[in-house]
Length: 336
Ligand SMILES: [Ca+2]
Image (spheres, rainbow, N blue to C red):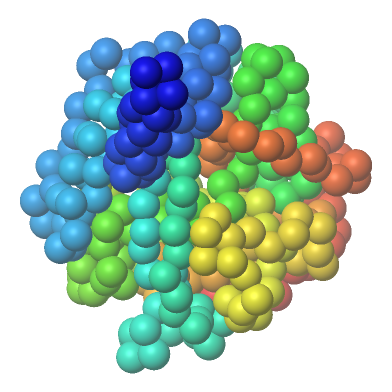
């Protein structure tokens, strides 16, 4: 009888684990995330799901997965970082096609080959790019060229962004980091397979992004345009966003589950385009790259709360040194 009960209990446990995994959830991630919530993140009770009207097909399904993820984990849809006031959204686990198809207008060869990628764990991602007020609060300085508390911080190198994450982690006891490139594109698309999160029609980009045609060649306060289906703002445009991975020319030799190139490398990935770039550079699949010590006038970042593992920054950082000559030179070279 005891053996029978043990077998039944084992089956119940296995089924439970399967149900959680089947919903795209990881029990370990859930408990880790709940621990994070106890340590400085509070639920945003007023958070709601944005309208998916006008967004690409697949957006509603992605938002449904997000809703299911919230229900399955018991985690809030949106949390507030008490230290900075930064708000982050729960991005569900899921699968997507990374990269652009060969016939996408404006495509570059480094956006392929397209491949199916699985993000196996939910994570929290900043709904906005990191602002200058948040930068000042964490770093005690603000390197931005165009000043404004609610403007996204810019003139930030990859090393600077990593140092911000390290210090914020130290100050809060949470683990903040940069998104992997796969996490970034998955979150940007939010279910869409089209050029942008809404469609392939660049004429609609002005509703979602500050870019060359509508920005007046300057950054704008975060969160003024329409969000994507996950509730993330300015994934297209405003400032370019650093990713954790080092840059490689092609998507090869990486696993399909939670892919990530090594952190150390000659250059690192920037995504999403910016206020001074064209619509082609704001596509979901567009990839930019730069040396980790270089800070563009248009390079910023957004953070994720790392539920497992820890990202370590390089030692060298230009945070307190202002814009270096290498930065200015590099920027002038690429300016349109
Ligand atoms: Ca952006």
